[in-house]
Image 1: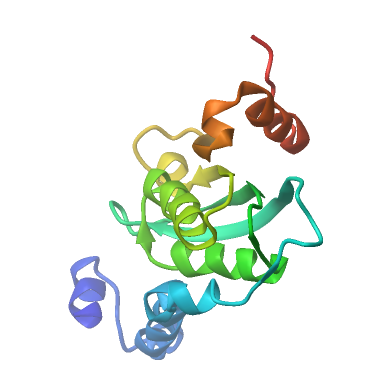
Image 2: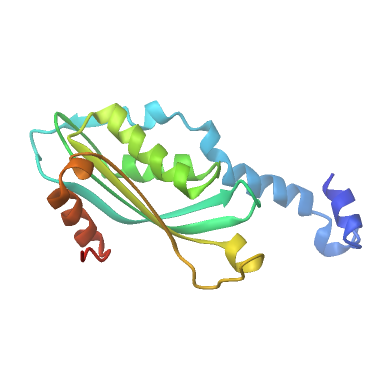
Amino acid sequence: MLREWLESIVEDPDREGLRRTPERLREAWGFLTSGYREEIAKILDAEISTDICDEMVLLKDIEMLSVCEHHFLPFYGRCHIAYLPDRRMLGIGRIARLVDAFSRRLQIQERLTTQIADAIQEHLEPKGVAVVIEARHLCMVLRGAGKQRCLAVTSAMRGCFRSRQETRMEFLNLIGLRTEG
């Protein structure tokens, strides 16, 4: 199929630079879609007691890379996640792994944001969860709109981050998003 596509754009699939491209492409896409092989429950299974913390837990600037399911082009950026523990907590490495597991699938940013928030909310049952993703989409840069500096921002707020403005504002201030009225 790749060979036919290369020929359709008037390229020689047998030339030196393209000979191993099918193999390299399989490897790359194996990595970019490795999230389908991750078990979310297993990632979230390593909880720890909350005897140590009853305040907001925040991870800022978690790097993320995903592929837009509409154009098969990457989008990349950073994810900020906070939760207010009730009875259980997660190790911070588990939270970063959760971001990778959901982002290494064909995605749209809006769904990615809610999947992360919902997984933490359902598994840990914290008092609240907040997720904000800021990302650049190559489909916006390379085609269509042609906007080089456009940044898409999505958020998902659960529990006290949705119901209590002061909790939501504390999170947004900590991650550096403007919160003026």
